[in-house]
Image (cartoon, helix red, strand yellow):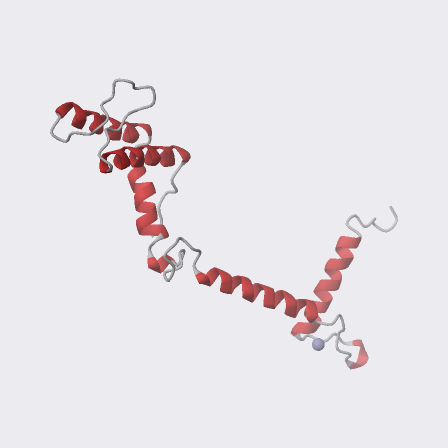
Length: 158
Ligand SMILES: [Zn+2]
């Protein structure tokens, strides 16, 4: 499943919502910076406290409409979705899926194999070029090296 990536605004809004929810879960009344008269403890039976809770949560939705889908949904249904193989399912912390390390190891093996190929072509009679993969690679590599050595080769006669 693909989803629009959360923007900086989305992440800010999510952080604000998380802060409000953390306050509530600790029993404190969520407050904005600079609010001196805010009550310390949250009373769920006090309509003014509930109104404040609603206003603070709603402000996050005004600041970044749709952030819950992109932030919470993105995490739950994209990043942590097993079939996407982004996160290591065996780890308790957020670790990159082991398939990425396997791909890196394969790349390193292939690079080492390519570098170990000798710059020698097979010798065929009558000056014919060998068409095997090694000889093609050797010719391509030496053409690449020559092209890089003379990036602006002057035309004959100029
Ligand atoms: Zn060959």
